Image (cartoon, rainbow, N blue to C red; front, side):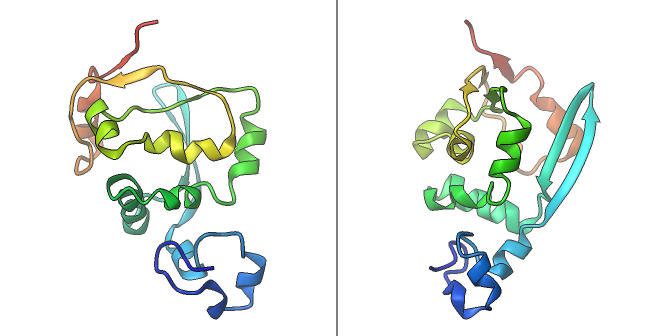
Length: 154
């Protein structure tokens, strides 16, 4: 099996790969996607992050989203699926929306694809009504999204 990011044959790396054979990434690429257990409260809502949004994560996400490398969808929740299914049993997923233009260009919703691996129900509740890109924006600039994402009618 080859790593989905670097293309190296996984078993060439180490014997540890035998225990992680199901992981679509080699040990080096997996290590670059830094796992974290970050919890915070934002305006009364609990938020959690499982990965540091570093250069490796951003690059993999762009490769998946913008280059239509749909095979990468399995790397983002690897090792987290059972924990997330158990923790959020009985919940519905609600995704932050992409613009209609981006979804049409890609041919898929990246979050729906990634989280489809959980086999959990989801509600398509929000839509983005502006092409505002957050890619290069930081902190306060990202708050400009307020009013650009609205709840769908019905």
